[in-house]
Structures are given as structure tokens and as C-alpha cells.
Length: 70
Image 1 (cartoon, helix red, strand yellow):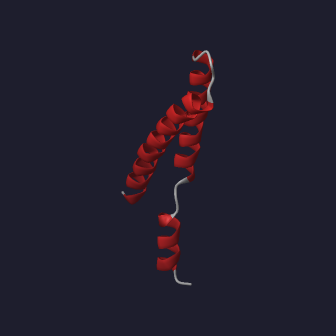
Image 2 (tube, one colour):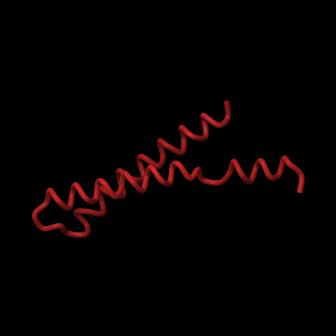
């Protein structure tokens, strides 16, 4: 395999840092929402956690990809 193909494969993968930051944000949000709501319903906990986690993941992956292209 030549180096150009390997470089394209490595750059097309999702950055590990973005996954890690999104997961941490989701777990923290789920904990805060679960602690602050009296019923601790799964939907009440998971919807904000997924929203925050995906938002942080999107920002982080965009930031990592832009930083790597410079």
C-alpha cells in the first residue's frame, strides 16, 4: 500500500479525542440530570445526555480535523 492511501484512511477515521470528549460530556450530563430530577426516568436522563454528547463530539471532531489540516 502506498503512503497516500494510508494517509487518506487515517484522516477519514473519527478522531479518538472527539469520541472521548463526547462520551465524557454525555456521562456528566446524564449524572447531573439524573441527580437533579426526582424521577430519574431513562428518557429524561438520556435525551439531554445524547444531545450534549453529540454536540460536544461534533465540535471536537471539527476542531481536531481543522487543527490537523494546518
